[in-house]
Each structure stands twice: as C-alpha cells, then as structure tokens.
Length: 210
Image (tube, rainbow, N blue to C red; front, top):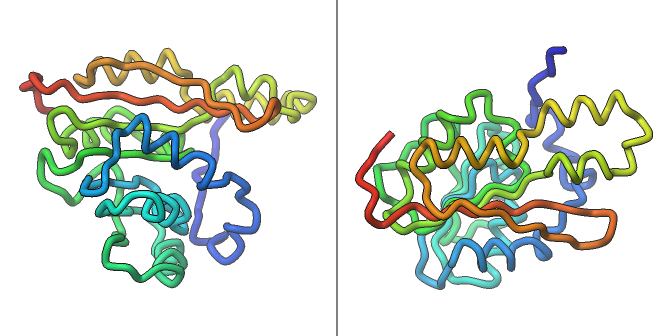
C-alpha cells in the first residue's frame, strides 16, 4: 500500500485550526530532554507555522533556526513572529544548510514519519549537532496508535502503523548513525493522548561523521 506524501502548502491557511497539538504542553519537556538553556543554539526541524519555536522562545532566550520545506507554512510562521531570535528558513531536512557541529539541540515534533529517507535525514541531524548536543523527537509510538480512538477504524490504524516508524526501529537507526545514550520517555497529557518523546545525546567523544 503506497501512502501519499503530505503537501502542507495546500493546508497552510487552516493548518493551525486543525492541528491540536499544544506547543505549551510539550515544549517544557523538549527543553528538559534537550537541555536547552538561554544561550543555546537550537534547530527546529519541520517547524510548520512556528508554534513550537514561539513557545520555546517564551521560556528560553535561545537562538532558534526553524526550517520547513513549505514556503507557505514559513510565511505564516514569520507573520506571527518577526523576532530576530527565530530564523525562518526554507530547507529540506535531508540536506541541512548548516555547517558541522552547529547546534546544542535539534528537535522535531510529529515530523520523523514524513522523512522519505529517515537514515539520511537523521544523519544530517547528527552532523549538525555539536559534540554532546541532544536530539529530541516527539512522535507517536505504535502502542499509542493502537490505543487511539480511531482503532475502531482498522484501515486508518494500519495506515498510521505503516507511516510512523516504531520506537525499536528508531533506536536501532540512531545507534547505527552514532548517537549515544538512546532512550525514550512516555509523555502523557491525558489518558487518551499519549505521545512519545525520544531524546538522543551525541557522544562527546565520538569522532565519527556521516
């Protein structure tokens, strides 16, 4: 079964009305797991309309580079916040426009399943992270998908199980790339809304490069 690639430019005008993930709920966890401080240099991969970057900036005086491959989404994001602390950049996650060892933290929220080549995209994240930097990925686990209210529609559940990589798969992939201390956290906002925040720390002593 082939799954169509999402085109977020087509839904940019009403995206914020239909996406109900609250940035203010998840950003404190991303700050915690990503060890984001006031002077941290942070990369937001797949920023969409920028709600997570804006929420992060309200809690930490970090410098944030927010990338997305949809120009319309970035225009929406920029219109909502023109601060010089957030840099909105049109970019593909598979080829990040940054030098090696740039960022203290790279995070992404409900993005990893969109990568056509997950290994290549995460290699790019690894390359762009400083030694000792952290990557935090918020995604849906297969456990969460199977418990979602849409489980009564098995066809939809099957599609999501195929779209979203499993946690064991991601762990193996990250370790293959070179990330150290790979671990996951089950984060729940409500009993019926389960998310999984995965955080990885790049080894300070690692000398490997993708």
